[in-house]
Length: 476
Image (cartoon, rainbow, N blue to C red; front, side, top):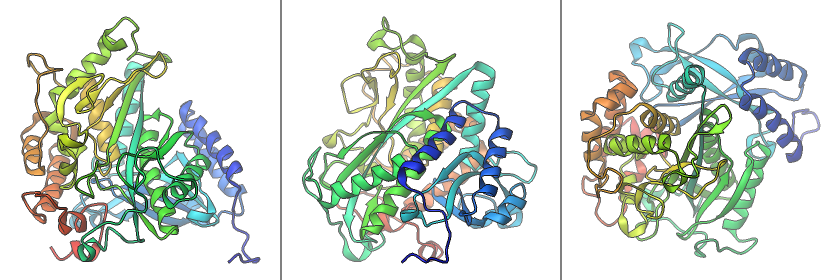
């Protein structure tokens, strides 16, 4: 119910879109951080209707955390925000818990009041260590630093676009209640591209698309996916850090909209056995001097030698990267060849079972698609590992590297063994962060049945890092 005494900002969607696109343009054009900060601080000062700013950051597993700061406090103290890192899984130990939060003013969003509350804006933060350097457990900070270095040293712009599938289930807490119900209930059984105007799935997709548009996502297309009650809502590519931020926002928006309808948006990779799982196909390209250097009209599959070398490095480290791209017990149910699963460590323009696909493209859209990524993986870790490996990783001396049939692990323990033994993953993450991530994944796996079997076990949902329940985790 509206309160006439409240004068909190609540903007029409068209005006939200206009504001957010202006902010996005600054970020795309790499306007200096000082100028962007100055603009945002002035806007917050002048905009009397904003009462609070929600600062967002992600833990090592990719779980999104959110803190609301009173606007007046933030305007005075934005450069000295501290928090207890020991309370965040995968961050510091209790004895060394103090961390800072920096504000990435370029990653600022005006949010629709009907889903986020009136008088609020959103902004992404970056975790800063005690010595003022980026905190290595914050994969967003690591990705941002890597992307910035590639641009400064080599003039490269790293671009990404992600196709994120999910399921819409009956009930507002379908995942949390799975240990009791033992099943997920579809809201729609129409299948690929098929649902009628006004049915729950179509209404959900429409509402999510509207919110995305208002937040500057620049939508492309949306539709029901192959499995019953499954959806995919596509939007344009962006610079790699912005693209990863949009993945976090996409899932947050889907959950907010679903919850408002008394439903659950789930990004478990394989919540229902017997139908297609959900992926997060990760499309990547590299630009230099405004030119897409993955494109070559005379190259094999019309991509450049540079792009093929990028692909070869991804394939060489496919097994080592697997637990970073498929981060949960449930993710290994999806790597099933009976459901278009991308579990073959090959590259192909046509085989959808390949880990890497080369889509049809042109000078603008030429790209490489890494298909084996699960939608529950940490998006910053995914994009960092893909670009870091594609640009700097080792190339294996394997005959017919792009076509020889090798397979990704079908369980998280084998994936962890590959990850732990790999020198390349140590180079990427550092020994300390790699160890913390491995420990988190192993602890999660040990709480689930070792053999997956043919039914989804309650534990793999109940203890999934995206279905977070503080009380349950603290029993271990």
